[in-house]
Length: 103
Image 1 (cartoon, one colour):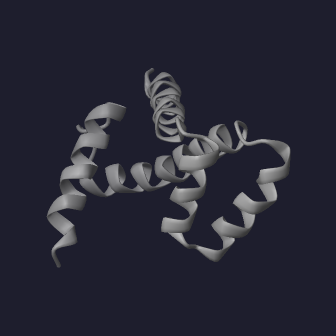
Image 2: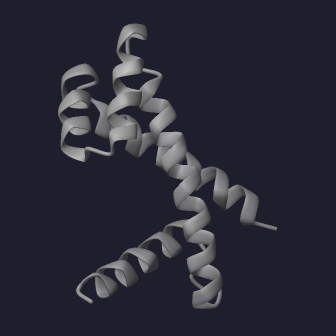
C-alpha cells in the first residue's frame, strides 16, 4: 500500500491544477481519472504527430507490446523532446478543462 499516499498527493496536485479541490474527494478522483485519459491521449497524439511517417508503425507495435522501457528508448531517439511535447499537451488540456469547468 505504498502507492496510495503518493497517489493522494498526485490527486491533490492535479485537483489544485484543475481547480476542483473544493469538490468531494470521490468527484475529484472521478474527474481526474477522466482527465488523465484525455490528457494521456492528447500527449500521445502530440508526440506521435512528431514521428516520421515510417516510424509510426514501430511506435504502435511498441505501445501495444506495453514495453515502457523500449518505448522510452525509441522516443528518446526519434523525438528527443517528447517529454516537453507531452507536458505542453497536458498543460493545454488543463487549460481547456478549467475553461470548461468555470461557470
